[in-house]
Image (tube, rainbow, N blue to C red; front, top):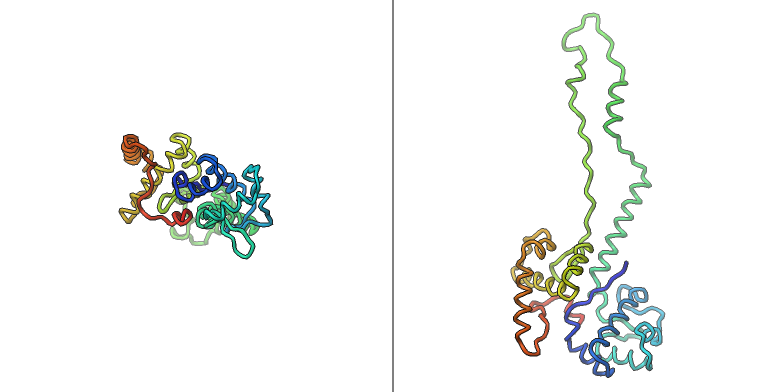
Length: 265
C-alpha cells in the first residue's frame, strides 16, 4: 500500500490560494486536485519527483480536469507546485516531502533481502531436544581396572538444564512524521480513526514543536505520549477553544521551522 504526506499547511498556504484563484475554482477543489495528482504520481514518477513518460493530458486526466490541460499544468507551474527543467516536469520537493514513505520502502526491501539471504544460506539451529538425544546416545567411558572417584562419570542429575532459545520480537517499523515524531503505520491509523486526520496532524505538530523547543526527545513511544500522558490532547483542546473564539481564525500551524516547510515555499 502506497501513501503520501499531506500537511495541514496546505489548507491556507499562499500557494494554495494562488492556485485556486488562478484556476477560478474554490479551495476544496484546488486541494482535491493536488491530492489526486500526488496519489497518481506515486506510480508515475521517480523518487526525485520527475514525471516519467507522461503528457499534460495525462496530468489532467489524473485530476479529472475537463478543461484545457495546459490551463491546469501552467497554473501548477506558475504557483510552484510543478518545476520544469530541460522539458521535464518535476513535482516540487517531492523527495523531501515524501521521504518517510521512501525510507519505509527501503527498510522493507532491506528486511526482505536479509530474510532471503538467511534462507538461502541453509543455516540450521540445533534444538535442545537434539542436544539431549546426542548426550544420552553417546557411549559411556570404559571402566578402569582401578576406578577412582574422580574417574567415575557424573550422574545425569548433575547436568545443567538446557535453556530454550528466546523468541525474538518482530521489529516494529516507525515512520517519521515531521521533524521528531515517529509512529508505526498501525499507530497512525488508530489516531486517525479516533481523532480524524486533520486533528491527528495538529496533535503531531504540537508534539513535534515541543521536541524542537526542548532540543531533546526523552520519550520512547510518541504514540503513548499522545494517547496516555494526556497533555497533547489537553493542549490541542485548549488551542481549539482559543481559535474558536477568534473571528475568522485560521487553523493552528507550527511555529518552529521544519524541513518539510520547503515544500510550501
